[in-house]
Length: 299
Image 1 (spheres, rainbow, N blue to C red):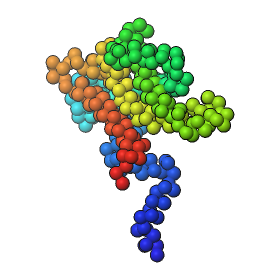
Image 2: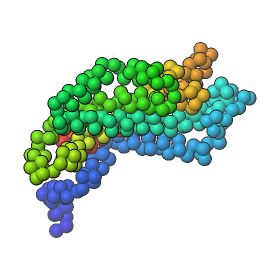
Image 3: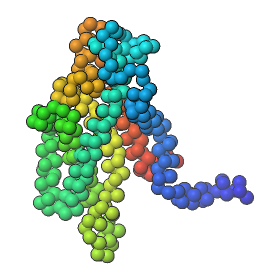
């Protein structure tokens, strides 16, 4: 009898329906092998970056003037720079800094964009018009140019880089949430909640916003990769963190001066770290999109 139940399609559908939303999401996400690999890669990179002071024999700012510009070896896996500093240690330190910039800046942009899109889409009228016109103005500038302009006004530095990256993230989140709000605020369950006397605050944050969070989570993940790329670009052109800081863009800018001398490792390894990290965030975001949308489930 147990064998019959296990092979009964109706029982299988009942069991699938009984799964919690998180269990269902986890089941679909695990089937996206590329996204799972990307998530594991990012997690390992973050853990290695946090534990680097205890895992590596060298610090990111340990100078060794007797061993400058050495190529990769068993002693220095990614070689050393012009001051004899271990490049691999600096890359791991840069991973921690880059992920911090990406996460914090996108979080700020997401919070501001969600609030703007939610209030604009729900109330409409002049508020919606003002928010969307501001978003149109920000969209008129390419992301990197907008970030350069903001940093040029505020000055270089870590905090100003985060502000610049956060600002160009706001309009995209506002558009996403506004679109979801416009479609959900006329839904039957929202109308029923409104008729029951619920306040606008309860309707927006308990009934409308959760319906748009799936798309927001996917875009949030992909935006982190874009923000990391923007932050490293600012550092590369001298508008980001201080050149002496172990940050991927600053390392690329310094290594560029030694490319003609054949010191390829100074730019190759920081560039590879940027490429793999941004690619991993994009793949992870794509996998989250598939896992959060039941219509894309291949089962």
